[in-house]
Image 1 (cartoon, one colour):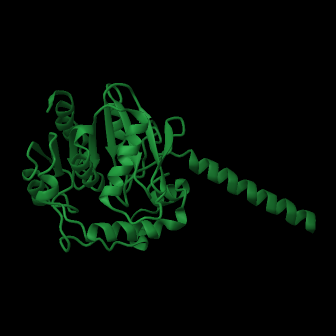
Image 2 (tube, rainbow, N blue to C red):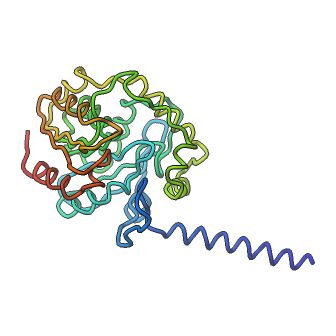
Image 3 (cartoon, helix red, strand yellow):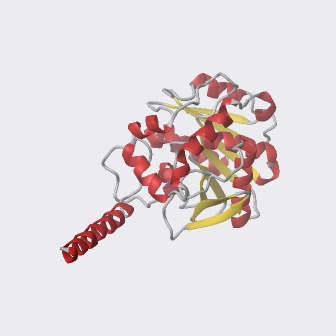
Length: 294
């Protein structure tokens, strides 16, 4: 009986290990992605052959580097964001640029740290990653939370940025939006996404802490004339025409406060406009990245 139980236990352990390995090899998927995941996608955000870590303050920040040329930094969205959501940008940009895709602290393989989350902290994380890769100026593409980080980075470190594309990040002040989203609500929306993300997180038990930190940061945050008016580089501000997370009007209001701005509204697209309609988004981003200079 004892031998039988030992064999049974060994079989169960092997099945668990095999299942874990099989799951780890599945292509990564971004939040709310359709079930039929393209099999030819690199597992951006979990690609060890391109991955690196840098110590930034109280956390280790994970990033991946692709391609060669002038550097473009990609900053994904918050909470529901991940590096894999930037896959089309990485695929397209890495043909002619060096791409640095950063996993925001508390997301993917990056630690959350112990300090309270602020935009200054996030901008500092980006600077530390950039300094590990290049001493030259970079261009930045930031979506939503990544867009707000881009705004702050350009304000704090104007000598390190050439130009920026900011998607779905409008004006913000306390009370404008509700950031009290919780883990249970998130899990119900896309369990498969969270299963993958929790599997690669260094501190999956701190996911609730990440949610609270993000809510605390954004519920008190003001993004208006003082911040946006200080940005010196050219900025292409984009929004999906059906963005339910950050209204087109708020995004337009933000763009008008930036001295050197361009505006693009992506048709048939919601908050993640570049995922909903990448062809239209890329048609705006490509010429801006290639031809627009300070």
